[in-house]
Length: 68
Figure 1: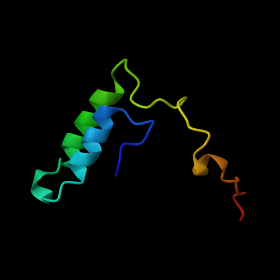
Figure 2: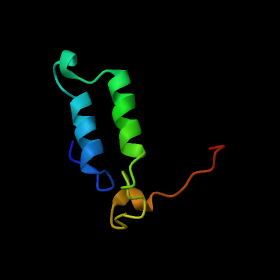
Figure 3: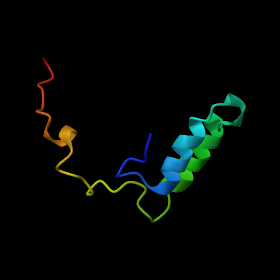
């Protein structure tokens, strides 16, 4: 999977570590928590929610009511 547009390099690297073929080389849950907490407490935004591509098909999917 390629890196999502709104995903910083550090989060994407962590994602790819979780997808390693050998499960013994994947980060543990406690390692994930530590890394995610470190990323989220930095002054640098880890996800640019203002960056979007209006030409993407998912951007134009109509909203559905909760009762549908």
